[in-house]
Image (cartoon, rainbow, N blue to C red; front, side):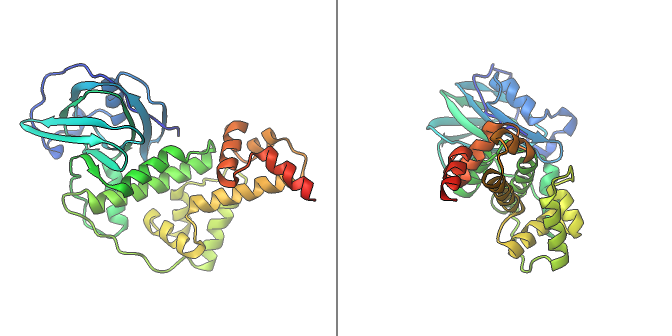
Length: 319
């Protein structure tokens, strides 16, 4: 999955009547990425998506004066850089806020509003299916989730940072990226149910890790160099747990999330190959599942502070 970005001026539509998110039939709702592209009239800078977990998109767009029509997905957004005025009009109700670092805006699935934004916006968006909220509530043994609240530039550093990490941390490695997105989507859904629903859902810490046998199976799958399914769903299914409980139990057992554990394992594999063999950096990248040598080098440098070639040279000087 790749990352997306939002964009620009919207053409004026007929002013939409005030609606509640649950009053609109699903058949009348567009996928969020399609509606954003229609309204922003541009392509995202980056976008990553999969059918069951929604999408993350990073856009940059200019002035916007248009109606955002009902969407099939919840849209949650935050703003990496800049300061910009936002005005959201639903029927006779007007919400005014300032897009800036540390705030979030939420457009619940099925809602419609006119937006007026006078200038440039840098925005990261999550398109979240309502079925994900239902699954998280069910896995946490909670009642069905209520409606998400409309938010316009609402202060929430936790949600904002989670969305920012989604935009920043994709490594160009399909298995790692998918696992990261699945974890992040579940974390964001948990946060939304706890802080941005009309009936907040409290989540209590889960005590206890995985049994030694289950933990060993999970680690064997994460270490696999085959085409084994490394998705969070597959790991949780092997353990006989929901995704919600598996992630918490895995971290209790190892101190790391599944994504962080696998990223560390891939880094150790890379270091061993760079130090102990003459394999080219391009081939190391390919064998570890990176889309390109550039993507591998960027991920390696992010974790070590050095490029693969500099790290290899330094290790060999020390031998």
